[in-house]
Image (cartoon, one colour):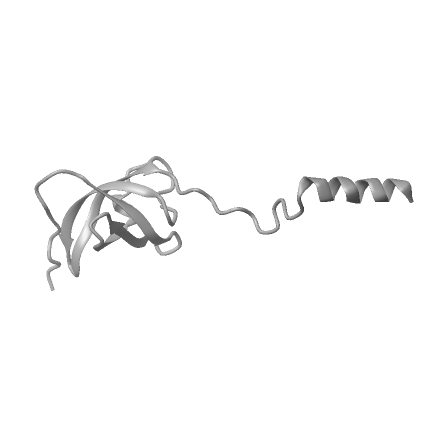
Length: 107
């Protein structure tokens, strides 16, 4: 069987957001700003070192056609995702913490 070659779509680069990416398997999906999802393989990520993407990263890419449909090509991260707050981080308001410390020192 011959693999269907990836063909590059002519035109400008597009923008989207990483929907999910499995760095162990080396692939994931990007949601284009138009709403359509595109497959992305780690070999198409343009960055030094280990090539990966994080959910929520903003990316720029070209669109091509792979074996199973449209794929993202020449992917570059334009904005890193904002990390979620750590669980229980700043759980107590500052005043409650001060009161707690004060009570501990009085005992």
